[in-house]
Image (cartoon, rainbow, N blue to C red; front, side, top):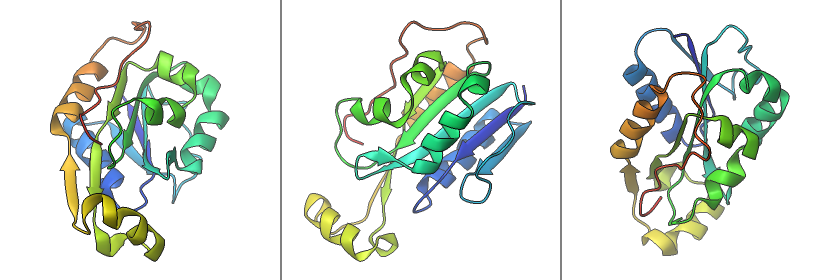
Length: 173
């Protein structure tokens, strides 16, 4: 199955996870970083995976815009959606706000993969905002269980659609 894995990464974690997903899927995966290629053509792909990171409660505009521009095409593809986030979020509100509801309902795989918070990668304002919540320490929390569950869900045959897929939500993300 020919797969397009489309992502954007602010501090590098989402890119690492996208590369990890590509390796787990195997051959025939093309990675597209929306920072370098803002509008990849997806018509020739059987499966599309889209991911980004949550900053200040929202996914990157590039992901939102890509989804809006390609909504009709995405609804004809086998679809996986994921986010990376680091702060405590026991509800799935961040995920549901990240992607259009129609794409969430259409997707066969959804994931919240947590992430990392490396202080030297943060700007001044981000350091001030995050320092109290994590005591100024680097935090690395990639949720391998959630990634494995996402890969398993991708194995669902195209055409099978759950009524309301529920992302694996770790206790903290």
